[in-house]
Length: 211
Image (tube, rainbow, N blue to C red; front, side, top):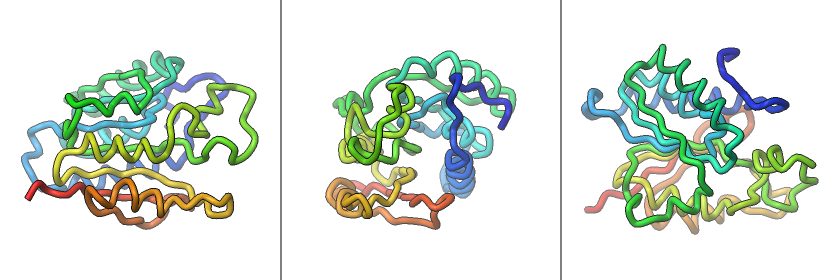
C-alpha cells in the first residue's frame, strides 16, 4: 500500500483496503458482460483508495467517478490514478469535488451499476472534533448527514445495482443506524450486514428491479 499518495498528516485506514478487496471479489463473480465497463461511484472517496483498489483487483473493466468534498485530495488522487492504471490500464476515473447531496440530481438518477463508500463514521456531537477541518470532515458527517448519503445511494443506483459501504455501530451514543437504514434504503431494495470489516459493519444494498 506504500504506492498511494496521501495528504500530509493523514493516512487512510486498513478498513478501506479490506473493504475494497471484498468488493472486488464480489465483482469478479458478478454475472454479465465483463468487457462492458461497470459504472461505479465512490462516495467520500478521499484520495481514491477504495475505488482504485477495487479497480486493481476486480478483473473487469470499470469506469469510476470519485466524489469527494475536500479539494486537498485531488493532487493525490491524480497520482494514485496514474499508479493504478499501470495495473488496470482500462480504468477510467474522474474526480468530482462536491458535497454528495449534489448527486441527488435528475440526470444522475439510476446512473451507476455499483456504489462503494468508506464514509465518516460519526455524527457531529459524537466526540470532540479535531482542530483541523480537513481531519474532522474525514471522521464526522459535517456537511451532510448519514441519512442523506443513503438517499444518494438509492437515487444513483440502477435497478438491481449494488452498493457496499461501512457503518459504525453508534448505539452506545444513542444513534440507531439500523433504523436509519430501514427508513432510507429498505423502501428501495434489500440491505444486509455482512461479516464485519475489522469490527465495522459491512453493508450490502441491492436496489429493486423495476418489475
